[in-house]
Image (cartoon, rainbow, N blue to C red; front, side):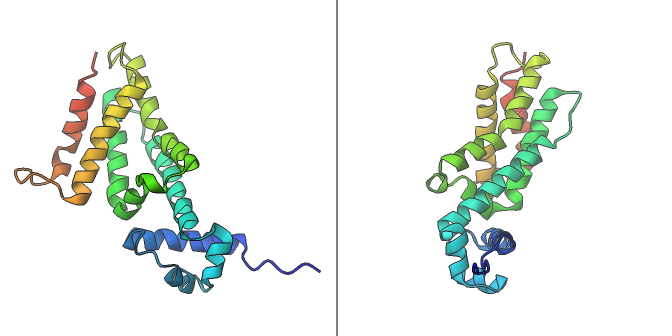
Length: 194
C-alpha cells in the first residue's frame, strides 16, 4: 500500500500564497522559511520537498507575479487614442510595481531569473508591445517605429520612474515623481509620433 502524500498541491498552494505575502512585506532577504512553515502549519521540509528550497520558492512567486502583470496590462481597456492607451498601460504597470515594491525588486533581480522566468518577463510586457504595434498601425506613430524598440524605450522610462519612486532617488526640485509620470511617458511616445 503506497504511503499517503504528505506534501500535496493544497499545501503547495498555501506555501506559495503565504510566501508571496511574506516576500511582499519583508523582501526576499526577510522571507524566513521557518516563519513561512510555522504560518502554514508545516515544516521547512515541505518547502524543500515542493520547491527545492528558498530559491525555488522565490522563483515560483516571481513567475506568478509576471503572469499577473501580463493580465494586468492586457486588461487595460482599449482607447480611441492609441497613444493614451500606451500611457494607460504604462500607468497600470507603475501602479502594480508601487503596490508591491519588494516583489517588484525581486522580479527584476537578474541573478534570480532563469530562462523560464525571463521568458515570463518578456510575456508580461507583450501587451505593451502589442499596444505599440496597434498605435503604429493606427498611424499614431511613425511608419518606421519598430514596436519592440518603442516598447523598450517606453518600458525603460517607466522602469526608471518606478525605480526613482521606490528608492527615493528624486531630485530635490521634484516633489513627487508620480505627478509628472504620465507626461514623461507621453514625451517618450511623442518622440515616435507620426
